[in-house]
Picture 1: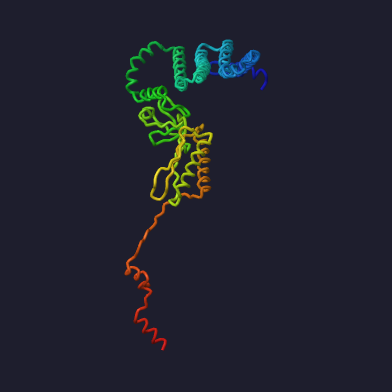
Picture 2: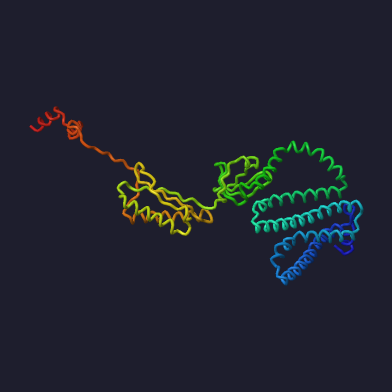
Length: 390
């Protein structure tokens, strides 16, 4: 293709706009993002150096750097808006392009607002945790979701307003129709208020491990506006509506301050009283010497004469960071119990039965001494045996 032909092709109208304008628009968009990338990264670099000089680099990493990507979109949308004003586009197509730019601006600004609000909420949550206000801190995930919803509503209203719709009339109509929507979405509203109730009362928090109505056992992964998600021991996810969650019997294992060590050791009935006293004393010493056992609660007592054992109860509370650590401590204590019993020359009991017989009647003794009937030889068999022998 010759240069003149290529030039003619570029100025050829396509849907009422020259071809070179259609080519220039995506190039302008790409160029806007490229320039915005260097502008924002350059500004971030200077700000990072300033924060480093002030010895607040961690603050920069936590509060400003997360805004890098949305700010690139904001700057790119502004640059693209400036560039397209220099392109020869008629009013009809410019009206359409303006609407596209409104969507572009709304997305970029909304993303920036959401990121900024999340940073503020996270900073406030860290402050609450530092003040040990766990109840208020656990509500921050719900506040985040509310902030997302608020920004989304504002963005939609902004878009509708710039598209020429009467937002005031729409809000008035929404107020009238809100009652009908509320009645129709009664279950959804119940779920929302149920989520707020869980966040305020805090029977469980995100990360807690618990037993829910003796039906589900697992770790709370999320407390949403409508339902809670629980990761079970089988690694499946169970979703429970908030309305049901508020009516459940919840056993929260994560709020446990100490673990209960309670075992009954059964010894054989031939264990002497002195051996029992020695074993019980060594059990007490073992519990009191363990650094994880709470001294004031530890005890070992002769509990009962069981059907087939002499029972000793060991009772103590154990300090452990979690259930896995408690199992390790419990294993150590149980092995020590086995060592103590073996060293004392005793043994563990197991279910047995003993039959005590004083005397037997003579008829019963003689019947027991007789061979069974199937072993007694029949007279006819004896005759046949003798005849055969002859």
